[in-house]
Length: 297
Image (cartoon, rainbow, N blue to C red; front, side, top):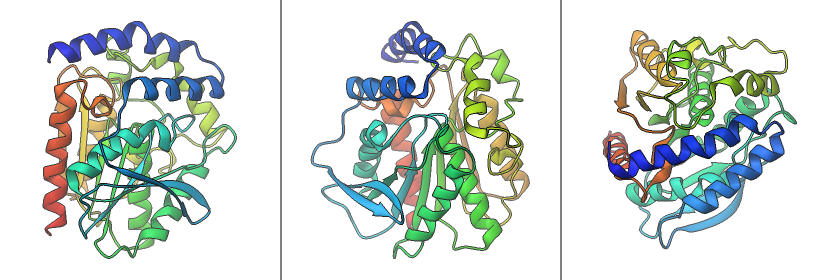
């Protein structure tokens, strides 16, 4: 763990984590994440951001200056299905687009509690159907709840017999809305960002009485027979560590080609801190290598 990462984790633990623990209203959570994004995250130079529509949804298309013909990245932002937006995640996705030289789409899927489950998975599937015929293929991605949503979408693609994406990548994915992983308790104090005590509140706002074990809420319970390759990363001090580990094991049990990278003592979705900590740049470089291998298939 680098000195910069250690300092960042300490700062997150003293500032962002308590704010997340206290914020009770969705609008406050949304404003807080927007402020944090403006403070921390800077997009790569010369990236072009354009508002577009994917079906009935608004989205941001990110095009790097040297984009090549090939796959399209369809990325779902995190935020517990309650907050987050293309604005909060555009810098991360712009850096990834620049590394891969691939265009990316960031949809504004509907958020709870105004639009509870299954609005988000319905929107994700609609987005995929709108881009499924992209000539170079599609790569799915996401972080935290957005990573879980990408996996939910992958399972739905398998169930509906749709054209498979080239691959799916997830940063610190939320895959179990029942929060049954041992790390959820064991890492509650060690996690630098996520307050485990707020999980039940967020789940209630999102599910509003729906079954938390439903595969479209918890992809850990979904069928991935015939799925294309998946790449997952998480930190060993995250409360979502077991969400990542068990998800990888579940996928491998169904004969999916899985790459699971567990890093030491890094904060939740650390690749968002690209340019601030070296571990973020290293992870994005490793992911770029994996994506490049997919695009050559």
